[in-house]
Image (cartoon, rainbow, N blue to C red; front, side):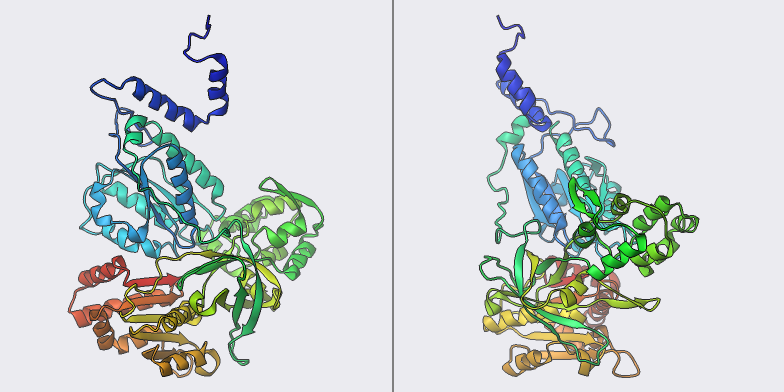
Length: 599
């Protein structure tokens, strides 16, 4: 006799209970209940309850869940892909779209919307999601009382407006009447654990909805992600450095490098507009100075994310040493119980200024205290890869990838300080050495599919990199479309990057027009936005002929100034008011005729 009075024997029950995950059990419960109830006139939908949804509210079983990823460096896309795998395993119908491809004007047709967004610059929405956010913020946005949503916000606590893009989406959707499926989560650069917990929360909420209709309605067109190669952020390729050459003049106050990497036998493919990630190491000189300052032994064992390392290895390979943050300062103040630092931590404005002007090593030098190697590691951030716009087209250079790198260097109290990744690329990897790299696709910075259409490229400094790739691509394809470059840097004689190549493209007719802005070659500073305004009539005429506009460079100053210049041109030449000009620019974004790669 079966004492458990179950239709399953003991071995079957034990296997289900001991081996199934909570999500599998929840799914199985709903599925089997629905199967048992087949034949009845209706199937009840479960209540989907979150912290902000009243207990008696219900959601009809949705036809689809939409995941929108708004990425700047690829992290949001990766998390969206992980959530997609979760939903696919559970049998839920879903679609994952990049923000640039989301049909936001049809948002009224959405039932459950999940937004995963990074934050760009000082609290701005990522470029690919800007048109979407502007629409939500406009008078055209519809009421969304029927919509349930969730937001995951990725950011960097070293910036003033931490995770502001996600906060902005969350707030605006709530204002439009949408209901939170789950509370927003804000994740720092060490985001994986927070994202895993958020994904679990989303899955837990969704598994409370009736399983039967979800399985029945599962579409056949779920996105299939095709990897470009077996190499990725977590499995980088060891690329050989073929060339590492300074391309600014000897008298320039800037050290800009042209670096060529060998991709032979990697199978890596990339397109013009993509970025390349570099896993770098901290300078041994910096690590030695830190160990000397703290009087810690580099051979001391420490634990980091469940792995054991020597302190020196962790400082070289695993943690960030060149970018200080308010969080690090606050943790350090509490660790050494320094009254001056603790007082500073209470003043947010002063704390941000201190973080921006005082590297970690200088903080440790000026404010010394007693702590262990493990305590030091615990307050530091994990080292993350740096992304660089690729300065070559693979159809032109074959199994190579080229970078244009500005070496960050400055002085504090007569001591030279440098950027982590740029110094590594400039000084720590001689030719024929190897570095860990991967490709990050950037589908939001692409040449038009119609090669006959004109393009306008606007760049300052190393922002020239992707436009070198564009020109190589157009030369290789014998493109007939017109190309116009507006480029700015301090000095003509010292800082005209790839000068001979641009002159050759002009001679060969690949580059139709070039306007140059040398900010320090005359009394009055001239920037690319000034060149834009000076050519307002022609810019407008090119736009009327279907021109695509591309901007690459500094997000906080250059890109904002260029955007304002374009708005002025549109208002002046198109006889639009400010609102109409903004709508015009958003329409260009939506149709991918206004693309920006800014940092």
